Image (cartoon, rainbow, N blue to C red; front, side, top):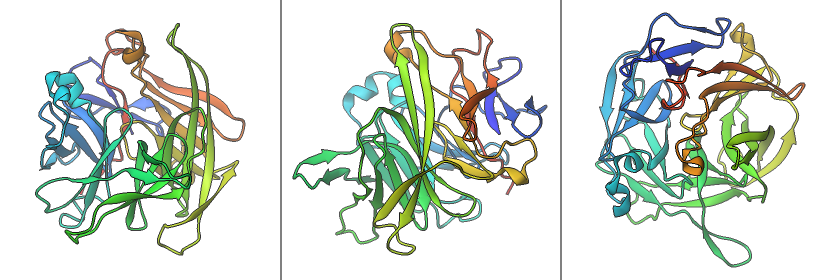
Amino acid sequence: MLMVPSKDNCHERHGLYSITTQGKTCSFELHVPYNKRLCGSSHGWLACVNKNLEVTLLNPFTKSTICLPPFKEVPQSIHKQAYRCAHYIKKGVLSADPSLFPNDYEAVALFDRNGTRVSHIKSGDHGWTHIDQTVRFFYGLNQVIGFDDVIYYRGQFLAASREGGVFAINVSKDPTYKPHVSIVVPMVQGIDDQAYLVESSRGDLLLVRKFQSLNYVECFTDTLSFKVFKLYSDCGDKIRSERIEEIDSIGNDAFFLGGNNHSMCVSALDFPGCHPNSIYFCIDNWVGDACDEVQEPLGMAAFNLDNRKFGTNYNCTSPSQKYMPPSIWILPTMV
């Protein structure tokens, strides 16, 4: 489901828009206030952050909450503005549902707009562990890599860079071990707008690259397209070295992508009304950074890989909704 503004634009609630009910908004709403900045949606839980960089995991269906330790290593300039501070955390992703694995789940958080800082925490930890994102390339130069998306796949967190590179996030219980990232798939220079990692319904690891060209003078999207790549492991289950190949179809799968949520996949055969071989994505570009107060209407659209055409399923067309937080996907869980 897509979390959207409530019907009466109440700032204390979110509405729910369902793809499978012929594009209708559900009659019930979630009590999730807009003053809670959502920096993640993973396994049915929302990650909420406040101006003090304290993160709370919230299951809006069961109303369960989990308080995570606050982030301490934050540039002083970020604390000067509450808005900048709350938006300093770009995205948070869980390894599993904390309701099912209360003592055995992990989380990774991406910081700042470019994801140039990454931290990791495991249930029971008293603080976050910073991950060294410096990578030494074959030409001898060191570079700090920024990430767009993170996925927990086969027992390990993997991250995707905007240039289409895939990196393993390496952590250990050994206190002498230095957490770091390592290259799985090399980066390829391009004009990507964003990259996502998705596990298909068959268990394959896929890289989705969104190519978007913006006209910053007029503040509108010029062109938009997607490419999907399949990653092939050379080392069995453990992801160490991958081969990558572009594919034209994802079969009966449907992907759900967004800047703030864990990238998800379902088989459209299990959900009537959900289109197969399609990518549903949030229109979550807040272009206020580039164009002052101007923001795009928020909502979602779908891209069909068969005919490579777009279909709009939900748009926040009301002027009062235009300045509300971006829509975000959520997978309902009732445990």
